[in-house]
Image 1 (cartoon, rainbow, N blue to C red):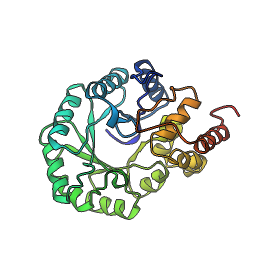
Image 2: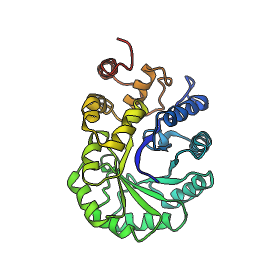
Image 3: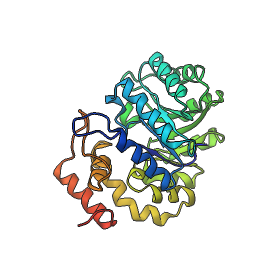
Image 4: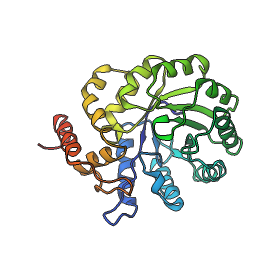
Length: 285
């Protein structure tokens, strides 16, 4: 179900800072029209830490409505309070999401045993398939391959979004958990992860170029990676989703509005973003 390219959707805001529901609907339709394989609202790229619970659920509800069963929707439900994560996961499941993406607890930095018990508690509380999201650079906690192996005893833990940046770790995951779907959490590593038996990518870049990232996930044509390497690099010059939302605003796809502590990019970053988009023919010089 969760293979190919899944887009980690931005959450568009109006100029007054409120949720832009019409823009969100347009983004979902654009993704589907361009062949994306599944959608992931309310992750880090969706600025989930600054969404109210009501907004969080509304974004997922709209995504499910617009997807209309054509492609799966994986709603974000993560955090550092296991009890609260469980309640959110239940609500996401009730909205009709096809799966749940749950980032590791951040700030309180649990041990590997704590991570195991955390995901065990979530998996035991919902029926929806769960994607474990490991991104130590943002959370301070790495999900070790041996912990993932333990988690495979729960049938609804079906995949891992691996953003450690370590191909060695991802290789060990493939060896220890051959039935767990391995998804790249970094656009630039998509080809490499597919090469070791990964099944796809949860992508930031596909907000900008969904057709091309979908094609990359389907074919592992390295020429696609080569063509979009500069864009992929530029989208992470500052904390995600600052650059990707700026790029989409340049393309006329959303308003350039973030919620604090996210803020507009520095002028140098903005100039590099525009140059990358110009070179790809996505905006005019």
